[in-house]
Length: 441
Ligand code: HSE
Image 1 (tube, rainbow, N blue to C red):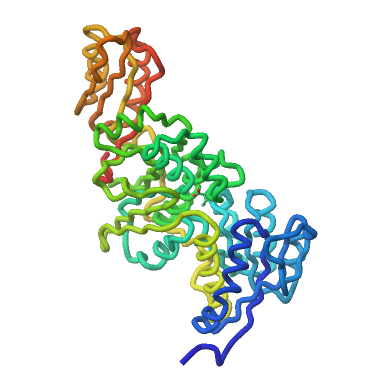
Image 2 (tube, rainbow, N blue to C red):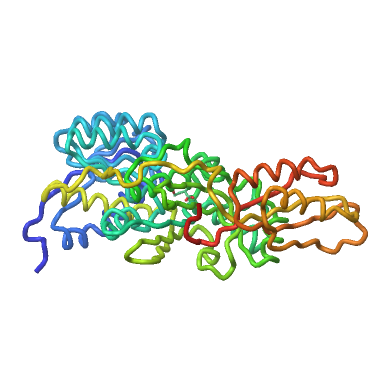
């Protein structure tokens, strides 16, 4: 039996008709029949708020009326759900607050907004008994939010390792597979529609960090503050490091790491990291995302898919719209985020532990290796391997160390001392090596 015999019209106000907004509009039209059959709801975008209502668009808004002011959506008593896809954190904050106060459920894909102002928004949602849905905010088309909120509700999350920025993964993949320059790969990512309007958000690591904050907060029940997360972008990743990492059996990825230690302190960090070539995360190429979640009951699970782009992201927005419609009809379980007191503290980044890769440019003369090794030794940091490429005619040469697991504090101090040695000729390059292991320390 289909659900169509009890069809209910659900009217949606869409704020923002950019790349993702257009995708939501198009795909709701395309698969409206399927959604009607599956959900029993006729999900209709009836009003659209755009910055310039007179602008000619790829898809004419059809039956939907356009306005230049999102306040009209919020004030419209006919609208059941508000979809926020305008981006940014100022106007979008006002819009979401106004919609919640008007008791309208909100669907948003705005990771920056949630990461920065999540606690205020979820409090308001709770006070007004209306939910916020945000599946599209993390990993595009991969349903990782529902997975954490529902699928893994019975698990303590031990760790999450994610490649959650399509633009950075696309750039790093092309740099390593084809030797394409960073700038050329970034320009292609922008042309293909993966990159944010301001791609600095992508390459600085902050887009992934915002997503990591959301995943960590859902996993550990307290909203992680942006200032407690460690973020490093891919701007400084060089072809030289990509090449040496490959020689050592690693691929460089922008990796987000989330995990709690035995004291319940949670580390949340995003940085370019060396991933062993044999690990499944090393094989994630192009704009694809992957999220490896380790739950105490379920064990290790992997979610893979398109993490950016119009269609995959709109798939998640549409799933939220369907869920919001069902909640309007059948009632809500929670407002979007369930705080709890089992964890509750971020781990200072200086105390986080991992292995490290270090590339130095040194004077090619006897004794240099011993002097650098002595600094690491005095800092209590073990060395697991060293390579010094054979360059007989050069006066300076690369020298690469793989370091054993150590705290960031110790490695930072040691690197300061190493950089100050007179035999070290350029600013050292050093990156984390992630083995996807259980937390230490
Ligand atoms: N700019 C983002 C990315 C889009 O490249 O992953 C999805 O959030």
